[in-house]
Image (cartoon, rainbow, N blue to C red):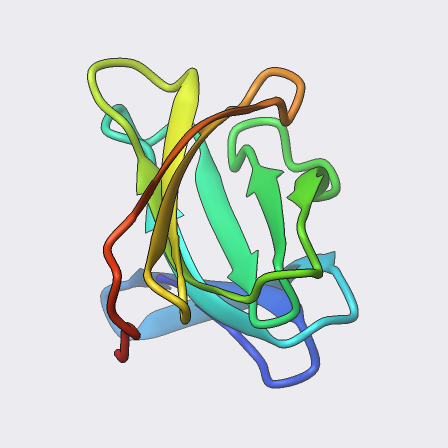
Length: 119
């Protein structure tokens, strides 16, 4: 079970039978607004309400890597664009849907919905 604390800490609960273990996986020092696994469960996207997207790979147990930072427009959510794990799609409060390369954070495309988006 993965979840985030208010302070921007990604936490993992390993639960087996009646036992559990808690592990702090990453600290990005920004409140995390959403978490999303890739279709093959090898990567986890961490989206902050300050407009940054991080990638965390559970099998590598390393730090979260900042993929992109668009502090000019706050993300509501992001998800992997399937098939594969090479692209993500995000949506902003202003209703802009954006496509990004996860390899280098390159902005690829956008579509303005023309409405404000809420969670």
